[in-house]
Image 1 (spheres, helix red, strand yellow):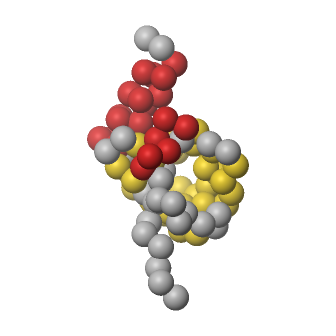
Image 2: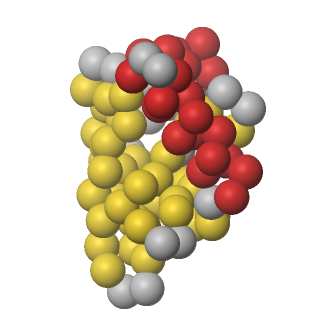
Length: 95
């Protein structure tokens, strides 16, 4: 199994079985989305390589703002904000 296939399967597992939570997008650098979130009072900071999912990212994504994320309840550090058939990127709000 290739690393790309392992990552695709990880995303699929989190979409199917992961718990949903709120996160904050803190930075976009090249193909990485950096975000932070709390699970049971513990703060996590994570990044996700979205190079294979670029077509799913809205063009108006700002560098800071709320997101939804899915995480593994047994290992909350294992999380995603974007997958092939799920997105935690929220639509921008008109001011």
